[in-house]
Amino acid sequence: MTHRVSRMLLLGSVVVLFAVAPASAQSLSDRGKRMLPKLFASAVSAATHSTVLVKCDLKTVALGTIVSADGYILTKGSELRGEISVETWDGLAFDAVKVGYHKGTDLALLKVPAVGLTPVKFANAKSIEVGNWVAATGINPDPVAVGIISATPRRLYGSEAIIENLNKGYLGIGLADADADDGVVIREVMPGAAAAKAGLKRDDVIRELSGTLIKNRGNLLELLETYRPGDVVNVRVRRGEEELS
Image (cartoon, rainbow, N blue to C red; front, top):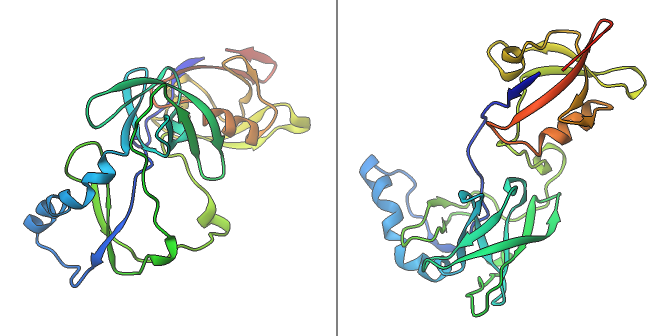
């Protein structure tokens, strides 16, 4: 059964954040909200030179932060697939390779063949105070977002520490493990989702996804993390005594 996984949300990004000045008021008019980013243009200009666009197969998927002059860049790891390249604020473009990944923070380290880049200057997190303004940079003069710090840096636990990739593949099914690690049982099919359009039904057992054997629910969910909205996947299922694909 060949179908496309559904869209959930757009891209995420790694951005540079920094404190500017304590906020004296948090209520702004609509016009003020539109004008606010422009007020931070001069403050973010230096950090803009340390920010890149990250592209996969020539499509922008995230922002990246230059961490060394000889071409090392941090970015959001779960968005990286296909041919990776980056574009700097002054229009330079480089092919990139992923040289490291930390799943716990979803951070990937890229390397580009460049020298003389402008690395970001990290600040001491202990200097951050609640109520300070922060701005997130892109590669253009105006920041991509402006906000106010509501909590100081702290260790996260439980559900707070889970980094959900909201741009992953989504079939639209409820799942339960089959017996003896022999696939995943579909307990629910969401109307209108990709699985329903492909003809999957309740009590079907997913045995294989695009050539990879599925043992259990965790195995399937981890594999779906590697797909993006619009990707075509082939699902092999057992329905009663039949094997369908």
